[in-house]
Image 1 (tube, rainbow, N blue to C red):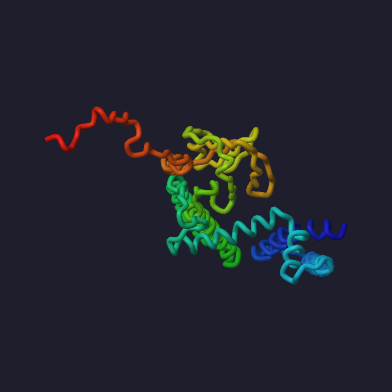
Image 2 (image 1 turned 45 degrees about the vertical axis):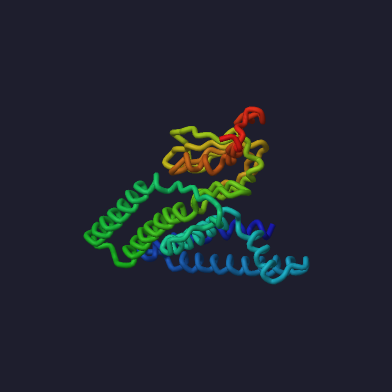
Length: 299
């Protein structure tokens, strides 16, 4: 019961604290008892989280876990999975910016074939970046014109800067984390949000098929996984056995058909299909009987 309350408080309190900070920065008059009660509630929640963390850490240690393993176990039990996944998205997105600046790619081992998919959405990301910058500039000018104090304007500006960084990280993640085809597996990805590994032994067929009007970035319906770019897919992979796909926020589903988008679908199909061995030298020729062979000794 205590763990359930701690998990719920971990979700609710940051939102309430953010609302309180925004109200204070905006200059809204708040009664002193309200502020004191809110801060007291936050302090109580932090105390509850600390006590719960210590109890869970002690339980993990009693089970034989090391210190680092115990901390990871506590985080898994205390922090809801959607929050953990969002934190992971943020961290891997920032790492993708570093990879993009260094012109490197993630998860493409030597001998593997990278299958990019980011070119199709490059213009869309640029348009969103342009719109976000224009919106942020216009909002700052309007707020300054109507006399809004500096602190609320700074908070709004920080939000727009975060939006720009998020869009850059999104584009960098898609560019530096392509689909990958190796001798052992097919790895289907979408930035930092999806990473599905499929053994090549399970692939029964691959084909090119254009799909338009996909309802989302990552969708699962009737055992079919769709990984779309700009609502499009163009490569279909059918499996001999179902595999478990983990969706962006942790929900799992079994799929037997995978549809994804590739900038160059022909190259993707060539990498996925087994190589066709050519005929051996001389194969297909009919042997010449010895009687019909010319005698080299006869001029």
